[in-house]
Image (cartoon, helix red, strand yellow):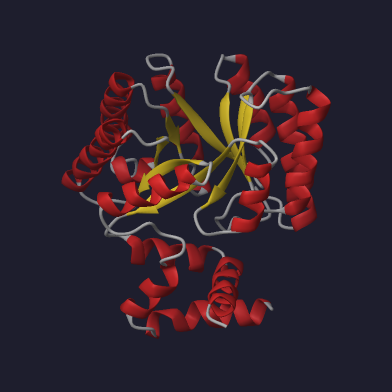
Length: 301
């Protein structure tokens, strides 16, 4: 299966973009904000909420970072105007992190100001390990000014338990916990699925023990079952945690969780950079490419 996944990744650049766009349509809301609004409205009708993400990370010019900031603020205004149940996720490399921390901090602060005005929550996404420390640093700085924000931590990194404990000790207790998608070396990250699963559940327990609100971000049935058992063990109410999933992935699991009364939030990416986003994700983790290919095949049988 690994060879098949790798083959899919290597051949995708040869496929016309319009065909890739068709395949990616299940996982990306569209190219413009109106597409995303329609998608979230449908998600809300189905009993789930959303977090919107404007695609376009790793910007290389300051003006691009400024445009990314304004697009995020536009999303915040639209959430209020359209009365949809959604928050906002941001990637700091889209806001100038690779250019300078000062620029990125300024842009992120402006987004948080607008979000506070609209009473909307903002999630700091986590990117590859080269960004982890800077992302946490900026989050620490801005959380002192704004309470309407939380951060993502990745269970496959060895450092994550320490990061969770340190942030909670400083009063930051709103997390999205995910496995992690980026390819990282064995020197800093668990490589085996069962190792990542064990650390995910270990860190989740640490977060629950620290009275944190956790977005349990997974499609892994082992982790979903483990999380549900832990929720019951801690006696958590339905407003004290949520499950989070990617748009278009495991819709039956999402429906089951909603039907069981759990709060479920879908990650909804959109924007003109859909192609780069899709290709980057495939290259970072060939298993995702294989999964998408299989999902497309099943959908078109």
